[in-house]
Image 1 (cartoon, rainbow, N blue to C red):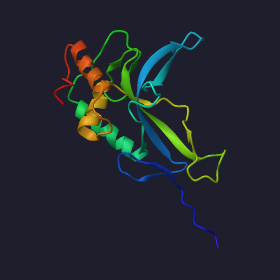
Image 2: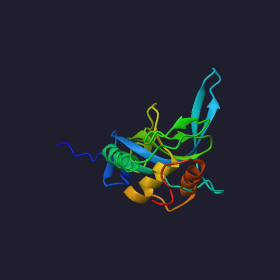
Image 3: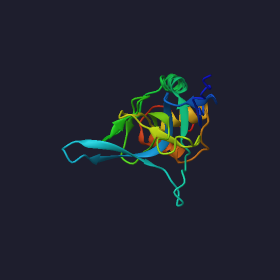
Length: 183
């Protein structure tokens, strides 16, 4: 008789609360600083730096989401932002995947990166030992305004903080668009 194997890992989807499955494509949602650097071959790379405190703890805890849940969250943000003009700035380093607005060097942004959770190859018998695999593809990058829409009007993941301040700065720098403070 073959024993049934539980393919659920220890991580849960922050949007729906379901356990994630080993080997399934999910998303890791984080708030990071985005910076551009030369790649040494005449091009540029985007680098994402975690926001940590003096103890190296996350200021904004990262969350896992099932692929279908992240797609629903992203669609909800796009719908909320569709009636407003995108913020366009001089010297952007990238654009928001959701609204198309400019993102500048060092700005706080949200990233949602495809990830796959696997049973740890180093300790496969330990049910809590997991490896995170991030396929080599670009993440969804969300500007501070889209992150605020997500956090305030779609699903609350974090307490108010610096990314709300960044959303308000974006509004002040812009000559139009939606007031981030108005919600």
